[in-house]
Length: 231
Image (cartoon, rainbow, N blue to C red):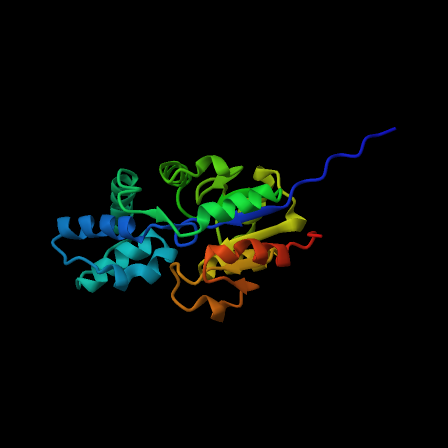
């Protein structure tokens, strides 16, 4: 008789910056190194925090605009490469996991959930940062902006991450902190849990995720509520 193929495990997919880890200090630190070299004033962390979710290019543009200088597209491209190179050497000077992350990962793994990361950070930076934070080995797949030909908010970034991790897309839950994360999950037809302490230009509640949790202590219960195959 033909054998029934084993079922795929449920999966929880996390964004990285502002979701798993507080990385703003190192990102803004790199921006301010560039601004200093260009003779421009630094940007306060509180001023630029909401732009981190928009990526390094937006950060650079914001910093130069605040200093009264506009950038040509070619110059922005040059500075973007400078940013990546410097940041790659300072990924974890002050970055750290948010409180409760490790315990939440432990509880999800113990319940049989596969774990993955889907981020618009470059894959190399993502893998190295998670290694420095001590959790790289917890994730079956770590997929960055350059892993596939498309990236968030394209839903294929999320669905391909799930496939690479070997998870069940019908029992997937996304966890993120920004407009991009919530839009990606909705476009993929996957429920999404939002955290309110990350990098967003509007309160995450206004973006209508399926659930909002104020602390990672509440993640397991949220995932179980949204997991469409949970008993």
